[in-house]
Amino acid sequence: MSHVSQFLFRRRGHSNRWHWTDVVTWLWLIGGTILMFGPALWLVSSSFKGPAELAEFPPTLLPYQQITIAVDGYDDPLPLYTVQTEDGGTRRLAEIRRIGTNAQMVDPDAPDERIDVNIADRTPVREIGLATENYIEPLLANDFLRFLWNSVFVTTMATIITLLTNSMAAFALSKYQFRGRDAVMLIIVATLMVPLSVILVPLYSVVNATGLLNSLWGVILPTVATPTGVFLLRQYMLTIPDELLEAARMDHASEWQIYWRIVLPLAAPALAVLAIFSVVWRWNDFLWPLIVLSQRETYTLQVGLNTYAGELNVQWHYILAMTVVTMIPVVLVFVFLQRFITTGIAGAGIK
Image (cartoon, rainbow, N blue to C red; front, side, top):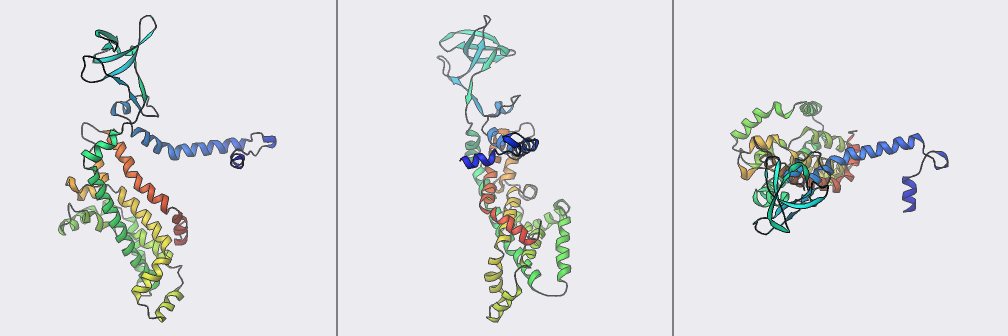
């Protein structure tokens, strides 16, 4: 532990004094940490707040819940406030109702007497509490488990098909010599310049003609062939020695066996990188599923989140909570496969 603290707090200045570069370095690191993790921490903290807390200004960093108390003569627990009295003291009163700028309040120990208090003289009594219903209600009552399953199915199948089709194309473009190979590769790379919004209408017409509207396969199939994946895998497969393939052919291995048993295992780092990209793309995809899926039972998570944003009312507490849920799989995939990113991207020549 002493070595760690010595490493963290060592300074460039002489006699253990602060050098200006030490100050700049610490400010840079602290600022970068806040910029990187601050929005995520704010999202997680806000997902445990209720609608009233989210509307507060200035906002609080931690989630708080107002304390309620059971009062004789009232069916529901009443919110508890600290009220400043005219003599400068304070009392704890429970609020019955609010009328304009005044609130009718009652002492929990003497519930028969009602007291009118200006709302500016009262402060809610709160404690740190988690609004777990923000997570429970959408998952149990609003079909979010169904949306979660649809997203998992779309992401899993799209990633598997993407890896298969893109690796086959990359294998052919990297290990076979045929006329027009470079032209085909150039055309594939050129499609990177075409945004999805340009091909939405023809793509929708094709999906409609094939009867895939309101089907999860209508979300999966049009997006599995990605020029980025073909380019990344081809660049990596170019680094695999052709002598390995020739040796396999001398042992009477078929082209499928060469592809499946030799090339794919050697291209595992690049496949892992493409898998991470594919998971992130499919999991966060919103526009294309919104166009293809119009029935609630086929919604993915991102489209399901959109149902909480109505024309007159936006349920931010549900949106924030379910956004945290949608982040978990992507974070887990990145945590377990991140060690392949550096080697895969470096091996593919994408720097």
